[in-house]
Length: 191
Image 1 (cartoon, rainbow, N blue to C red):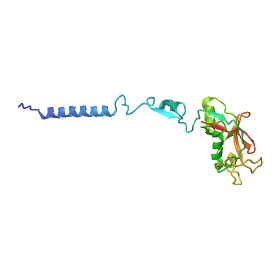
Image 2: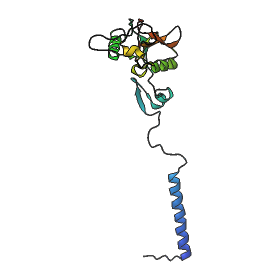
Image 3: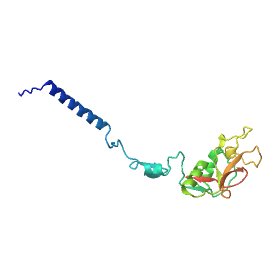
Image 4: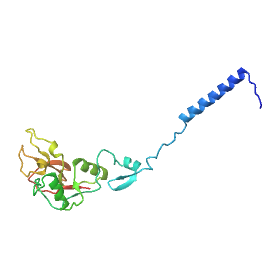
């Protein structure tokens, strides 16, 4: 066996050097010049948005996560209807959805204002003219009556201050407008 004798001064110097090196390595490991990637980059993760596969980064860049759904298609029904969608056992929102399925919009739903705005903003294409869902039971007249969406799509009354109204997109005004529920027009469908 070999015995090495170190003076206290030399022993403490070696301990100090080892301690400084150890602390330096720990500090470097905790804060390297380039951070390691703990997972996948956003251009490596695939997501499916409305039936379309794209990278997470592409979905972020094109506004797919902008807090609203951007339809891939908007069209008008092939037939027109007033604001009263009550027949048989279904009423209102269920009935208008069933009606559009048999009038040129199979597989679609009734468009909302945010969807139409997002579609026009993204595509630069104006939507056709027609009824659009604006909120239904969330909008009230000053006397407490439900007014928008033709009283949840159950009214076809004519114009009067207290009567329900529907929202439609007007291609001539290039704006969303209030219309009387007795007016027959197409319904806008989104997919």
